[in-house]
Image (cartoon, rainbow, N blue to C red):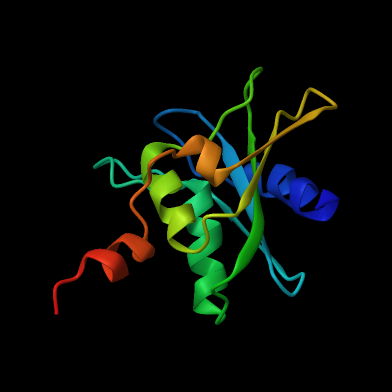
Length: 133
C-alpha cells in the first residue's frame, strides 16, 4: 500500500486545477497488486473529474474491476476524503475497499474504509435484492 500512497502523492503534482488550485492525486490498488493512478482535471465549464474517479476509470479501462484500496493525497494541511460522487463510485466496485488519506507535509496516513465514509450506501446489491422480476 505504501507504493500506492507514494504514487498518489506523485500524480497530485500533475493535477490540472487552474480554477480551484486544489491539487489531488489518487492511486487505486487492485486485487492482483496492480496500481493505477489519476489526478483531478478541471475545465472552465466546471465539468471536472476527481482524482479518485480518474484512477478507477483508468484501472477499468485496463480490465480491472476489483480493488483492495484507494489512496488519496491532497495538497492541503488536513486530510481530504473523497467527495460524495467519488464515494458512490468507489463503493460500486466493492464495499470493503480501504481508503488511505495522505497530506504531503505530514508523515502519518489516515486509514478508513468506504463503508465508514458512505454509511447506508446504495450498492449493486440493493438492485439485485429489490428488482421485481
